[in-house]
Amino acid sequence: MRVIAGTCRGRRLVPFSGRNIRPTPDRVREALFSILQSRLGRFAGLKVLDLFAGSGALAIEALSRGALSACLVEMDLESVKVIRSNLERCQVPDKAQVVAGDAWQALQQFRAGSFDLIFVDPPYDQGLAEQALVELDRLRILSERGILCTETRSSETLPGEIGHLSRVDQRRYGAIMLNFYSYASESLS
Image (cartoon, rainbow, N blue to C red; front, side):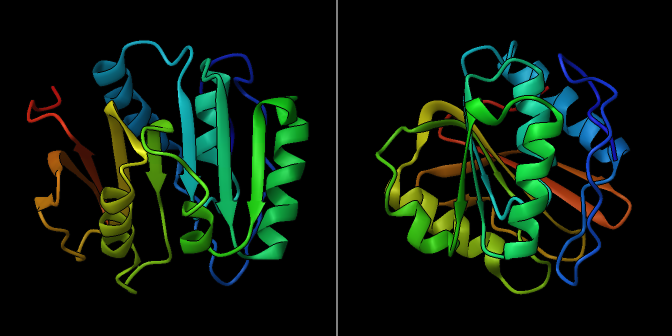
């Protein structure tokens, strides 16, 4: 697993093979960030939330591409150690806040519109992605022009709309499904 682009390009991230960790493969991450790039333009100045952060690869990729800051929320303490190690390895710990704890409790600390880009990559097949979408919509943590991306198993179906959030794109990569949500009704190209 490596950082694909930006200031940390090519840096290898600390691998972790814990029971609940399933890092997003490099090719899927590359496709994900290409889609986000076309939607958001530059990453400069973006505030990122990585919910169920795992190894921290998604937030680190965003930071490498110029995001202003990232908050990484992860409950598994071994994963938190890996995240901190990866932030150090990529020399971006000063741009990141690591929250070790329950995702639902962590969300309560953020104000409306706190993040421009939100990644939701929970353990598969537990209904956590949909639950996160409901909670994120309720709290309105995503900025008005922001984008929220969920990663699920391709067999897991998420609704096209949840509250004020509308799915603007969906991409399948083998066993992985990426869903993109926004408050805007326009589609990703």
